[in-house]
Length: 305
Ligand SMILES: NC(=O)c1ccc[n+]([C@@H]2O[C@H](COP(=O)([O-])OP(=O)(O)OC[C@H]3O[C@@H](n4cnc5c(N)ncnc54)[C@H](O)[C@@H]3O)[C@@H](O)[C@H]2O)c1
Image (cartoon, rainbow, N blue to C red; front, side, top):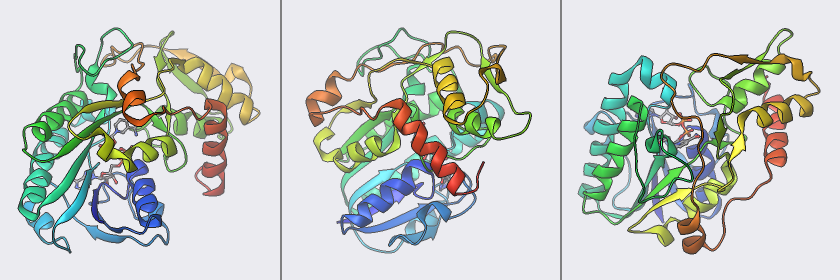
């Protein structure tokens, strides 16, 4: 297949692009390198790398190749905290940029358009979150990711919308705007570093990146639907922090309780995975401790902590 991966220099996109290349597909990655700073995550992988900004239609027109058998649209301004600080970036990237990628896919021809949606778009509703249940997106990121879904559904393209839940694993780097797990690991590798929990009782549905990639590779199964990609297990953020402390041999006293962040109203998050199980015949189940161990090992091997 000829495959385009937007955002393919990033955490999930790079692992997806490498997995597609390993299956023998021709893979073109389009990324403006704003999220991670470089092409490092793709290593020496056999993928074509194009510096392209999805907000600029001309950049997409210049992409090599003809029709796409599949487009994976993962490029996005990520994630909630950043979007509260820079909401305009989310509008132009996650909505305007998505419209450009859809237009590009239609102009070139596209067998299947796969969109990485986000569990953030459910917002502050009671778990487990069902694909056809209520949605109350509370941040610019959550709202613009949902708007992107709607653009995809109305595009006329054959599509699959996959809503990813708190992905973690090798490839995710510590960064104040990004996910909790690499930042927790980073904090405990600093002499006086501490993990701050933003309020008590928070839960998330943490999903290991290689499980997510496996679902993405098999996306045609989910054509025409919106599907949660998650474990269905609601995991305490405090338990994750304590597990990391144990794995890196740090004292649990370095986990401290802070104030809930004013913009973050989502205390509990977990998916209903009925549709995922019915569609794919399995659900992600990499044990949290195993996934965390692999994440710590990767961050250490890369010299990132
Ligand atoms: N990681 C998660 O926990 C998670 C959860 C739910 C949904 N998602 C979605 O999955 C996708 C991938 O997430 P990720 O964690 O790999 O994020 P990431 O930030 O690592 O990757 C996104 C990539 O998009 C690129 N990008 C940003 N703006 C761009 C632009 N204007 N033009 C071209 N490229 C641009 C960035 O440089 C980056 O490489 C995103 O769409 C995100 O919304 C991720």
